[in-house]
Amino acid sequence: MKRAAVALCDIFSKIIIIGFGIQTILGIVWMCYNMPSLRDLGVGGGFAGTYLHALAVEIYPFVYLLQLAAGVGVGFVTLKALAPKLSWQMCLYASIGVNFFPMVLQCHMSITPYSLGGTLLLGEIGLGAAMLRQIDTLSLRKFCRMTAIWCLMSLMVPMFLYVGLVPILAVAIAGRKQLLPGKKWVSFLILLLAFGGISLGLYGADPDNAVIPDREEAAFHLCSRIIWPKIGIDYYYGWPEELQELYKEDIFQITFYADEMEDLFRPMMLGTYGKDQAIRYYHALEKFALSSNGTLIARQALGDFGAYLCAPLALILQLRGRLSSAYVGRNYEAFLENAPMLSSVYMNFAIALYLLMLTGLVIMVLCKVSGKGKKTLSAVWMSLITIGLLCLLATLRGAGLMDYKITFVVTELVMLVGTVMTAKQKG
Image (cartoon, rainbow, N blue to C red; front, side):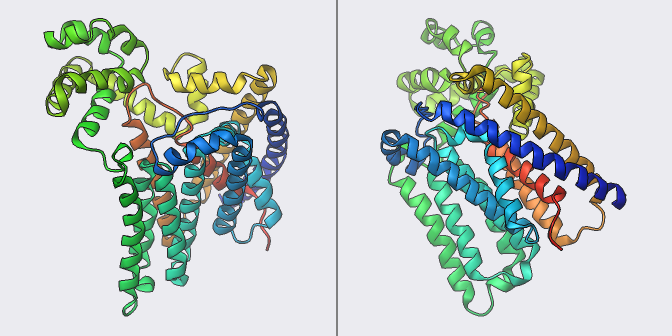
């Protein structure tokens, strides 16, 4: 098995080197076509995104380059942390290649907090994995870096406050002996509370960007996940008469556009009935939807979760009519807008390269999984749980809202791990 793994590493390392080079060249040409265009994807709900959005729009070409440079830099540092023996030239080359993957580059070439937020999350996962693999050398200074990253990315995207807590807790539990000798536990506790308090406190100062959703907001997102897109049918057969009357002129628009659940359905419900009564109606609508379409709802939720895990495959399914997500379609249309032929070739080549890398990665894991130490397995489990929580929270935002910009970090991580496992290392 080891001999087969070595042979596969040699084959896939050559494919990666050539593939990343072609992908980067295509990406640079695509950038030249799209650099003059402003693509504003909104503030995203984060504290930093809300207050820096207006400035970012004014200097968007600089922001594009800054986000791309940050992505390349963090990718480089992550690769060096995961594979110290990997040459710096290969780390830089692979990081550039990964950040020129079309879905990743499109996110960097947009005004969205998910670009820097996702980049910071990738850095935290990589740093956490490296710490878990070298837990005996863990220090409070190293832990401070990861905690600072957690704080910054939670200010960009509220969801990342919860997702980023997984690596923090994993390293803190595994390295408690190194972090808490003597009275250093006091410093550690103060540090964790300080960074967590900064994030929560800043969001608390702005109720519109609250990091902890209230009961109504949580209930609404669950309701949106369950009742759409069969809302148009359930409206006639299971809704109370007062709700049928309220939405009689807007039900078709809500049925056809998933984001109208947030923009139209929810404001009308709150404006008419208030939070407490709205929550009761949410539960009633959920109950009827589950009783009539429970299997379909579960299948759609699992499909969205899988789509977030493997966004390139989700795009293929979307183009073949096997997945229904307005955001994926809009993103792809925007991607093609300025150079349709080039963009299509670029995307198709990159997806083929990604799927080939993913296949090779799975084969090599099966060949080499035995004999791994507990520290490496801890890093793997930490990464998997973090990614799983991110995809779960993204799925719970609502049905029909699958958007690959939220979890582009998953695509990046797969490609970086593939590079680590296949590239030739020094020594």
